[in-house]
Amino acid sequence: MKIIEKDEGQKISFSEIGNWLNIGDQLMFNLEKMEDDAAVHIDVMGSANGKLRESDGVYYVAQIDIPPRAYTEEEIDNPDYSPETDGSQKKIIKRDPVPFDMKNVTLTLFALKEGVFDE
Image 1 (cartoon, one colour):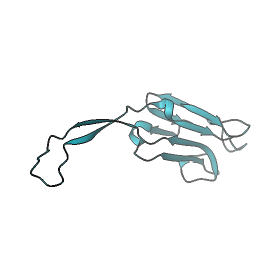
Image 2 (image 1 turned 90 degrees about the vertical axis):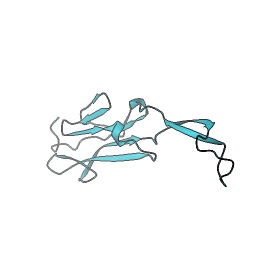
Image 3 (image 1 turned 90 degrees about the horizontal axis):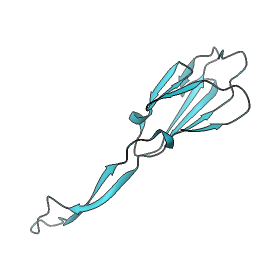
């Protein structure tokens, strides 16, 4: 995982367990399950009393960015090809998803607000 520290100061604790990301022992994300064909962006925010929330809070604590799912492509014979069928193609493109890799995820950390988070 790529880590970016956005500003100076104490950051929230986090840990990786396989494809899971634990933030501040309050939120856990299965990042592999969140991967999609479009990029995924998750805001982790803190409330005024120090509770972490996804996309709803007063302070930015972290942001998680998962790039779009990648695919390998291979041209193969179309098993449904029929020369009699109008529009049928002899070859088709087979797409297989590339396995998820935590190294492609970016975690951006923001400084915690003093007196709000006890880490």
